[in-house]
Image 1 (tube, helix red, strand yellow):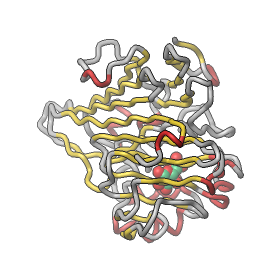
Image 2 (cartoon, protein in one colour):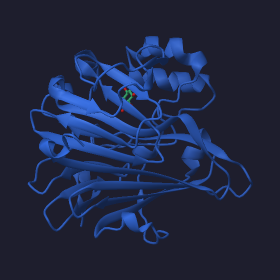
Image 3 (cartoon, helix red, strand yellow):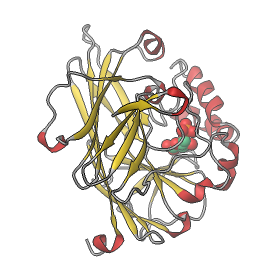
Length: 325
Ligand code: BG6
């Protein structure tokens, strides 16, 4: 179902027969809503989100491509100091400094108008569903100034029969002159939670991570499941393919399953950074958590004609169902 969303932007609504639904804006190929069959919203979308290009929509599932948090080591000190003051300005400055042009810290895919892909190549059977949309983004003249590569990015967004939300990305190097390219990637998913201090994340304990708040230094997570009592911005490396986000108050568990995406970013801005973001409510940090299926530590390299696939599957189940699994 096609319709107009906020500010007249085109969106697609997917509905599954048992009542679950999802909304996808063509701007950014951005999933802004995912509801279960009781009509409950499962993704966080800021009440201050700006639906106006070129700003990325705050919440839902931004697509980060061709880079996510790509910060070269020599920039680190400068970046961290200024990032606390102003995220975006700093990163643009840093990127210019490094000769990458003005590539946003999270790439350009989330700020581009995607098209409906009328003729997608066949998808594997496990991505088949009746409620889906295929979108496509290709190299534009504007983007090739900052990222001089030729690509085709196909994204299928589908709702499974049980209301699971599935995103399958296929990125192909379409360069005819034999030039490979590398990229990093993330599904920057904002989960809606009732109270961040009651949330636990399982699946990342004992793993190594890079701490974005400490010069991207490498640490090892100790002990039990993660809980939250202050700002967190970490890149967990080589994680299992399944991560669980347990919301005690809601008695709900989100299960993240990922394929082709070894890393996972965990982010909550907490109070100070929340206040510094114009498109984020001061107290909204209490009701969201980003757990982002990503490929960051080892960038993906594609030779001409090669294709990469990265898949995310999200389910929301009653907590009792998950215990002991
Ligand atoms: C996270 C990063 O992925 O995204 C954070 O780890 C960043 O450092 C956050 O602040 C939000 O980024 P943006 O560009 O959407 O404001």
